[in-house]
Amino acid sequence: MLQRRLVCWIDELPPGTMKLVDTGKFGVGVYNVGGQLYAIANHCSHEGAPLCLGLIGGTNESVPAEPGRLRRVRDGQIVRCPWHNWEFDVTTGRNVADPRRRVRTYRVDVADGKVFVSA
Image (cartoon, rainbow, N blue to C red; front, side, top):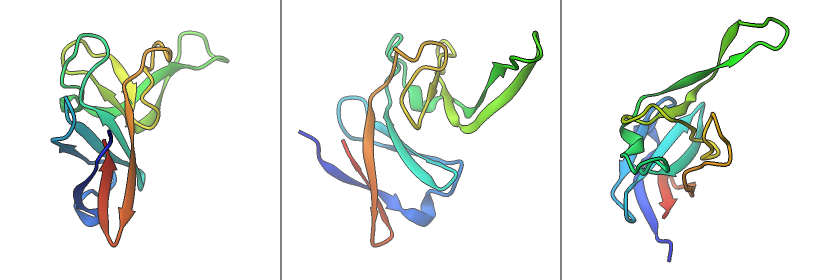
């Protein structure tokens, strides 16, 4: 059963940051991506690494009109697993290389200036 847990005050989670919440089996990372809040399980679906301890950034994708050229995309919304560098989009939980692989996402809400996660 999901429980609504206090994460922090909204001003303690500015864009580009993450707070790790000790809840559930593995914990939950709550991310602020451009002013929008998202939460994912602190558990990589590959081999169980503490995913939210990985670096947050963007990823590269090919430019269809220019073979061999890459561009940086989704800055601030991709977390990279600290064990094997698997990349997950914190806004959807999907793996960048294989969207069928994913990590669990959770509902985040703000009330009276406080951030809550239901996990």
